[in-house]
Length: 443
Image 1 (tube, rainbow, N blue to C red):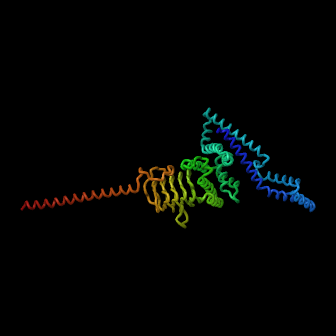
Image 2 (cartoon, rainbow, N blue to C red):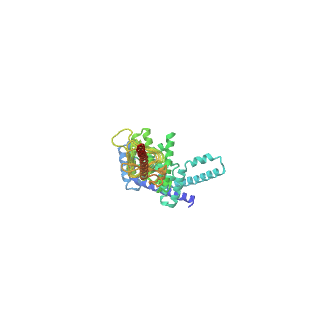
């Protein structure tokens, strides 16, 4: 399917999405607005006297049975609806809004074509092209969303609302996370405002957060074989959602908004079944595969490009206070249902086997396994978190090979010691025989 056809599918999905939201909102709000209209009508004539108030009350009561009265109530209801809702939710402007969407899509296609033509014909625009290339992740996500909308037209509304209607990756992830974490008290619009304020923040912190967001998407796409596209990580993987939600709550924590950060932690735990303290510091390029049951403590520090599987606990050893959680170096691979307890360091490039209980520091580029965990060998790949290889290959020394080499060395040294002793004894015996022979010769 061509790009133009895909845009048409998305436009149809946008129309359906707008119409459905309008019907849902009007259906849910109609009864309260009718009562509100009667209340407004009563308040409007409050100062006209008792007779006028009775007349208005009677007319509003008869409006439920007479067509003229019902039209008046509907007019008041529509006015209140128009004041309280955005323009795109009003049914009388739905068609014009979809036309605006189509026109905006057409203008965007023309701008893209013009930019491509200018970049291919002139080298002076290399800086603009480089700036576009810097956000190739967002461009790839939009292209995947267009293809998915063409393949699955029923999901076109969902893809339009989540990806194609937004201008930046930050706005898209804010929309996705806000709708997943919202509840009856934390509304999606409120959460989107909070998330956008964090993701669009100026300065070094905001730049690092946006860089980490893109590095995380790349990590999920490259290391998780179940992730078939960048947009699928953005929309479907709860490990990614929990990770980016933590980055936002950590930014709120560092700002001093502790209560909001802890409220977000509670929602993240309830929705995604992960528990990450807002104070935990996570690097970029993190993969939390599946994510169910992952627990990360308050003073935990995780380096860049670390892979964590489901059921991992990075916790303390009890009621100790202060710095009490593990420190994970870069490129570390932590297997499923592993537990790392205490203020210990897992050095860079090491690997923790699935189901291990780690209570002592782990040297770099070393694999540990067991409960309690012991060193079982060296990893073949210097970056196991990127290779996602959980096995010790024959190319890497194993525990048995190390033990056998140590035994052989010890036996060799013992043999050499005995050989030297035998030579000493033999020389001593020869000397005694020589003395006896000489004594006999003198006689």
